[in-house]
Length: 385
Image 1 (cartoon, rainbow, N blue to C red):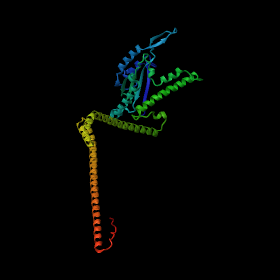
Image 2 (image 1 turned 120 degrees about the vertical axis):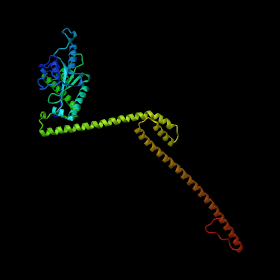
Image 3 (image 1 turned 180 degrees about the vertical axis):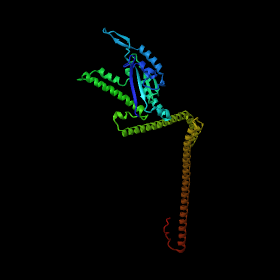
Image 4 (image 1 turned 90 degrees about the vertical axis):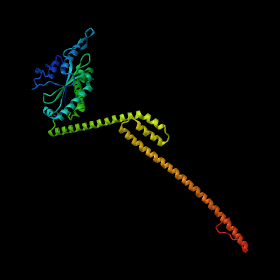
């Protein structure tokens, strides 16, 4: 098989059909008279909590001390010992589909069974907390399987409250029939509530435990699947298991990275004041960056973190120095350009002065020539006095 198997039953000290709490404890510890169905009985292996003999003692002590309130015909309420036919123990069985030959021969199978066991226990712990008192493993039957035991912790020691189906059924019966509903119809509705509670319980187990273990929710015979359909569903369940395992690996790596990042951040935060103080002592972009680098060198950060962030700061410093150099060059170029423009304006002024002087000289010569030749004074083209 490759489908999940999970069952829960309730037991009382008087029992039904001989299945008392004492018989259940005898069976799990492999007392011969209670283990006739097992060809070669072997002692159970403790997986969680206390051993079955200790559970027996604890159960019997609690059951003997348990009290329930009862009201007589006169209306007087007193505390009485609970009845012996009241359910005081919840027993659960979880079975893995691997057969014992595979379990004994393969390290991988034993690893898968071990992971399935731990998920099953974690699932029970989340549901019942400290009421889960014991989990043992049997390896003397066809498949490795677990027996888990729950002990009620209320004054009445009502094991029925630990069952996923009975509380839902009892709630319907306690509320009474609906309008127009007879007692029989109400009983059927209560039974449906019981089935719904059990189905939800099994669905939750499938989601939290069976899927990561590669197990299907139901077997082939239960749904009358063909052999091909059943093999296809088992292959799908195995693929889903691998996907869950990969997701778990990714999640673990992600959590490790987050933890490491938090550690780095905490170390950087602790050193931030020292780095900032060093930076504030110096003025200017270059000085502040140098102070940050010096602070990073002096900090207690791990080598990998220092290398990572010093490299970043060094790059920032290089960019700042480049920007500073470019700004200085720009100012120098501007000054040179302004100097050249000033010198050019001076040259223009000098040239203008020389031109004006030359024009005056030409006018003087023209007047002198005209006077010597007694000719009219010429007008110089293109030149103004």
